[in-house]
Length: 110
Image (cartoon, rainbow, N blue to C red; front, side, top):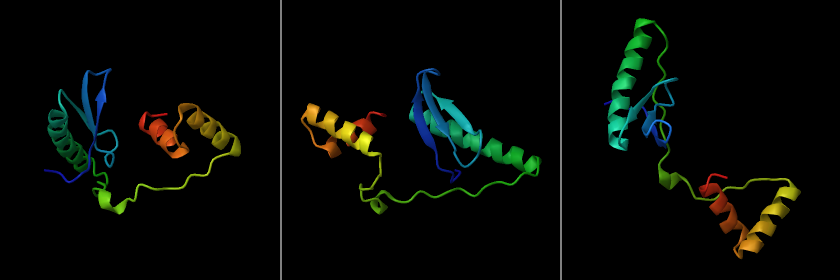
């Protein structure tokens, strides 16, 4: 098995899961399930490496992801005052804290 990290996501357009190896440009695979996509991605990674070797291109080392324990769940973002005010107003209208509102918006993708 290759040690390259994968990003796996659902694609409505493809009606299946896409697994991408971000370290290897253009290397991705499709599967009906996340597991199938991950297995197909392993084959795609092998093919990508084989093609790169044949073309005498450089093959990047697999990146490593920091363990979840390395993240506190807290970060600071500076925003324009107008955006801060707008977010605070929306949070107040929803009857929740600004932190809860921003978390909800981030989780929802916008």
